[in-house]
Amino acid sequence: MSRALVLATSLMLAPLQAWSADLVVEVVNLSSDDGDVHVALYNNPTMFPKSDGMLSERQVLPKERRVRLVFHDLTPGTYAIAVYHDENGNHEFDQAIFGIPLEDYGFSNDVRVFFSAPSFEEAAFDVPDGGAAITIHLND
Image 1 (tube, one colour):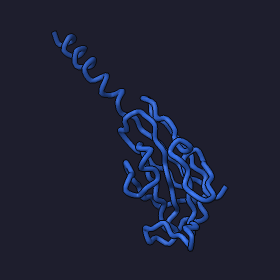
Image 2: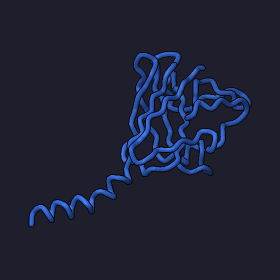
Image 3: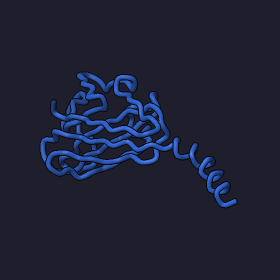
């Protein structure tokens, strides 16, 4: 009887386990270890990369000009990331006239931009059931 109960419980929980995945994000090539790095995760194309459209945001202190963090328990699907290095620690993405960035930034897929942010589709990547790991290079 107890084997049947264990088997039934395992079968009921198996689908739940398939619906959560971890995403490991590493941001490299920071210009210094000053301030912190803001990493914003998005799953909604119409909200990317707006500050009020984030699914989740993390602030991480850099060490050796890099940061590593994990977003836990994500639903498998398509995501995009926007990152900036808040070197002066004011928790704002500093910009000059005409919106020219004064702080280092980057996006998933290492998408490079010139006059505007990339589209969600350009920065999008998949997180499967087993999770994923990505690296974003700043200053390349």
